[in-house]
Length: 137
Image (cartoon, rainbow, N blue to C red; front, side):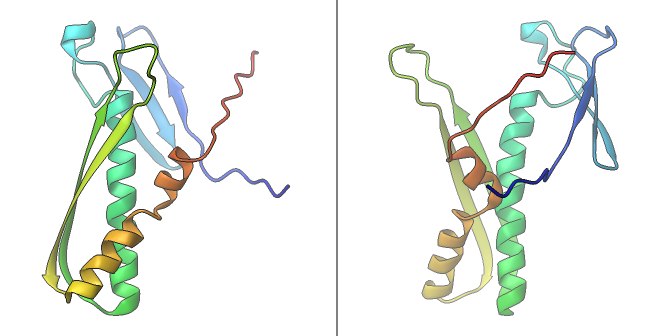
């Protein structure tokens, strides 16, 4: 089996209620929770970041594809909504992805772009079996 680390993140909560410092690669940002669940709403929640990850991955994947093809794409907007199932006997959480692509594209090119959006790396990760290994130190 061929394995490699493709991303890392470190989260550090120092007691500022839920506000958590995050380092991912060379980037620093924070996560928090909304006020209605006890946070201070100083930053996106971890679930917001999950939706943002899928949305931005689709947008970047589409931009890369359009550039490689030399297609005239002005803007790519991806909206992601996550629906969490409340019924414990039916556990399927669903991401709804709305794509808006503007530019001078044929119907065939536009159709191809929608298909390519389904191949973004984050979607591939989310639709495959996932294992989370919690190492204790």
